[in-house]
Image (cartoon, rainbow, N blue to C red; front, side, top):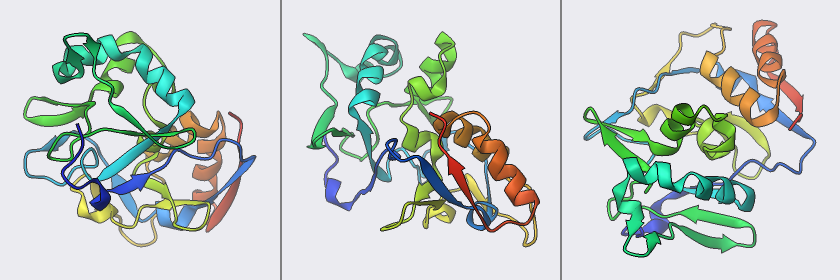
Length: 210
């Protein structure tokens, strides 16, 4: 299944893992707090606002947990097994299909809120999140700026209820950002960004450890 007009969805590409370093806009990340509790009906949701793309490696990892994800998302099941929810956009890059309303096919409803089945499956099975959930989703609302490989806050972040603008002058980095950077780029990377924020640095350069 595809969204009614997938061209209207902004594409989120996976981080470029072949790079040896990543520049981080620390000031941008210090501008907001993010608290994800799942999206209620009628709220703008990251699971339906973007076209999420994954690498071939990520695709293979997701396929391994399809049976568990299908227990939360029965629409993934077909009479012959599992629905093919990926579409190759270019060599080595695959988009995840959506419902007619634009909602990611790995999203599900629980207690009147939208949640990610891949996130839930990883937690339930005791698997590292970065081995199941797309890295671009782990990083959100952090994203690479258009045309430049700089990790910063995505420009529409404040359209979502889970993101709140912080008071000017705060140097405390959101703990979720620290964790996500560690998961995607390796141990010590999140701590480096946290320390850079506390030290008043506007930017920092991460040496990728994954």
